[in-house]
Amino acid sequence: MALTRVTTLPVTDAEWAGDGFVLPPTEDALGLAVGARRLAVLGAREEWPSGRVLELPRTARLVALHPSLQCAAVLGPGRIEMVGRARDGRPVETPARAWTRPTQAMGFDVTGDGLWTTGLEDGRVCVRVLDARTLSDVAGTEAGLALDTPRQGEDDLDGLHEWMPHPRLPVMGVAVSQGQDGTWLTFVERGAAGLVRGAMVASVDAPFYPAGFLPDGSGCIGVGGTWVRRWTYPEATLAAEFALPEAGTLATGYMGLVMERAVLVAVEDLLEAGEWYLLQLDPGTLRPVCAWELPLSTEVVTSVHLLPGGFLLSPEDGQLWRLPAEVGMPLEESRG
Image (cartoon, rainbow, N blue to C red):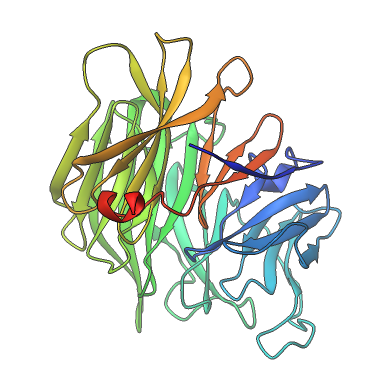
């Protein structure tokens, strides 16, 4: 497989960017940390350097990129605010809000109207939603919605909160992982009367990454260490599974990308000099379509992230590649 190198990013370890990126609730763009206070927004077919860069406050700790890709919510010590431009192109004028609630994750749903937050309150994961235009609490969500996940201590560092926005509805998949104890994925809907807790996927002793909903919203994909699974929405029932072959020692990077006609998963061969492969699975059945050998080695790259827009990122050195256009197509199309 021939990867196209986009850039080597100058900064990938900003506190607010995790491994160097921030994902909007869209399928074809991502935000990249290009400085301690700068977020560049890059689309699937855009060239580098990006023409869209958001300047962030010095105290930024969490950042959520709006689906318009023109603005972002920024949380810092004691306050939350919006930066960038509104949908009409004018500078955002939303007043900053004082913020004292414990917050571990923050993200917009696909409508762009709701800004979701999670945090621990009395050992429980609590979800709230703010109006993106005013940063006030959405009616009916002021008290927050406690999720039915295992209790955590306030200093529990294993609690990882991740968002999986529905592609069409004001619905979030809220994933809480507690190390090797497992992952709990809860569907939460923002309705007229507040937040409604839906079905949950409980994967005890088998943590997974919530790779995303299918484009039509009928189900979602999770990537575990040795498997890929599809669950239905809203029932959260298991509909398909792909287990890595037992021959040899293979492991995923707990990272996947859900596309219109494919699910992509990065797989590391731990026996053959630590080489990386890209598995292409059918999104309906999760049967393998083909395997692409990535020109990467763990001698240089210890982990990879598959990102919206068909990008591949090596977080430890900030190298960003673009996947070939034929990746994600049915096999007969990619050949021809």
